[in-house]
Length: 144
Image 1 (cartoon, rainbow, N blue to C red):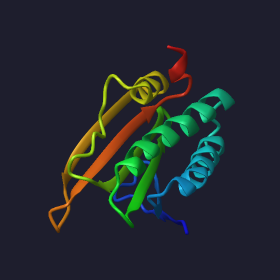
Image 2: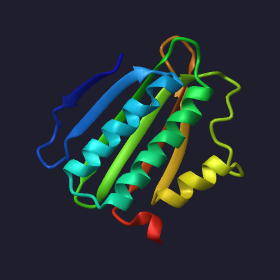
Image 3: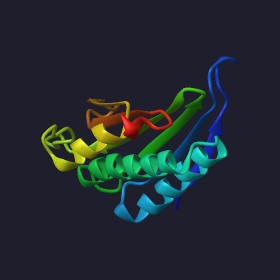
Image 4: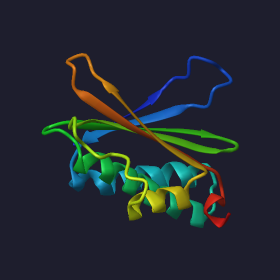
């Protein structure tokens, strides 16, 4: 089951953030793509950029899902501004998970579709590994 919420910004100048939490399971990818498309369309991105956003979210989420721990939750947040959309995906991952593989086809896809992509890892309160993939996409960014 997917949960969604709008998070009020702490600053009036900051763009609003939409967060979506889903089970870290491939069955939830269609939900993530649908929400990504709805947000992009609501903010008048062109159709090519909407498709780029959907594909980038799908690829980043798949990376995290494949490397996630059992029964974990994937958090996806969207922050839209006049310059584009910042998407952050976070999930608990296995300690040995190869979340960032710069020579893989999927990593090449993410780099082609986004203005920037970054991967970071940290630890949760219980000492488990948490990985985050941050994407920044502006309208027409894949046309570079």
